[in-house]
Amino acid sequence: MYRILCLIILCSFCAGAAEPPAPYGAVPSARQLQWHALEFYGFIHFTVNTFTNKEWGYGDEPPRIFNPTDFDAGSIAAIAQEAGMKGLILTCKHHDGFCLWPSAYTEHSIAASPWKDGKGDMVREFADACREHGILFGVYLSPWDRNHADYARPAYITYYRNQLRELLTGYGNIFEVWFDGANGGDGWYGGAKEKRSISASYYGWDDTFALVRELQPNAVIFSHLGDVRWVGNESGFAGDPCWATFTPQIEEDAKALNVGIRNGTHWQPAEVDVSIRPGWFYHNREDAKVRTPGNLMNLYFQSVGRGASLLLNLPPDRRGRIHERDAQSLIAFGKRLKAMYGTNLAAGASASASNVRGGDKRFSAACVLDGKSDSYWCSDDEALTPELVLELPEARTFDVVSLREYLPLGQRVDRWALDARVDGAWQEFACGTAIGSRRLWRGNAVTTDSVRLRIMEAAACPAISEVALHHLSGKSIR
Ligand code: FUL
Image (cartoon, rainbow, N blue to C red; front, side):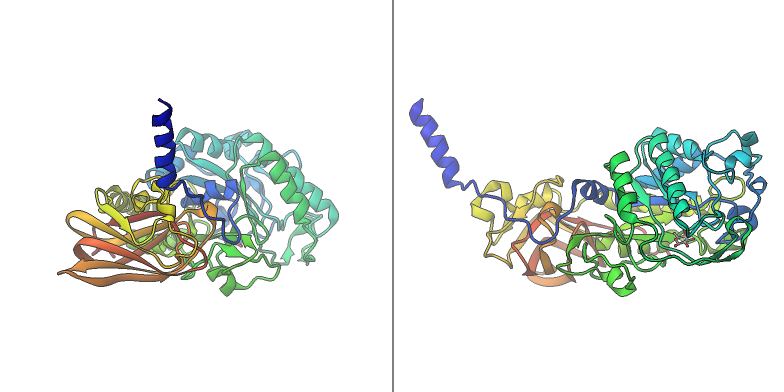
């Protein structure tokens, strides 16, 4: 018995119980890791603007104009869920200051509108609908408030935090809190009708963020100083590459936000916020300008496919519904995406690598195929440019590659390439900079029985959790 035990211990020692490598650079927090897994979720822009046909309300809109005729949060959440969105973020208050919930701190809210005789609470209806449809709920509370008399004075900060407290305590779990950076200046401000400017320190973000941490510890904060950064444009694309690391800055530098900063001080991944229509709010003049399923797919590859998240805006119309065109386009896109991910053409392959950390099975090449986000192929510390080969069970045709790094160890890979073996010779299919949370590459369809991932440059030994091959059907879509 004793000898068998010794043998087992010896064998496991020989097989090499290697230690995982040390993390490289800035790494994600637990709440950021949870957020990375979401990838695709929706924005809902709804306020008095929907009824005035504006994008930015001045702050003097009478609450009585907010009166959707057929509002149904359930149908909106159902559409989002069917399209594959993992959550919805609602503009609980946009720059015009009108509140979609009956805030105790203002009369400029839904309580003064005819909708449900002033007894309704739209934030509650959205929060409940999301829960019922198995998706998450997040809040947008505009710091800039063109209605409030005290805006730009200290008293407004107390008001703002009181409202935030209402939203973060009254509606269950919140996955993301969205702090808009827009501060346009002029507004109604309780009738003053003037321009007000604020200093960089006015909002006192440290204390506001502390409130979020206290009340919703799992929520990520979207802000130039928060957990998730803006991607630097509202057109729907992350940079290539789009590093998850960044050095947070007060001054916005659109290019840096777009590309990220290799070796930046913080893990601050990008979120791509973009609308399914030209505007953030619904305008019937834009009914013919809804993005097509093909266009949405491009957005997806340019955002999620570069390691960012996609926050796609779906503006309810005056009924309080997602317009049929938007819904159709979104759902058609979602179907194609589901079909694409539905088959991993690398499944069943046998995997080998030029280097496996300590020869330990825990870090073997097969880890990229097991579908688990917490297992990864990893090389020895000094092997910075290893290669991995997948021998497929038979010749298969793919046109999309999906790669993922094991994020708790940081962003390690700088450059990589993926080859397909055609007629016995390797042909390069893809070649990129950075991998991160997810790296998608779309190319011409290739039929092959073997693919090879080459890590060409890495700051630390690579830790790759996924290599998947897909075929994006319906390539001819516009
Ligand atoms: C911007 C705002 O000014 C827009 O109205 C919209 O809410 C967008 C998501 O953020 O800063």
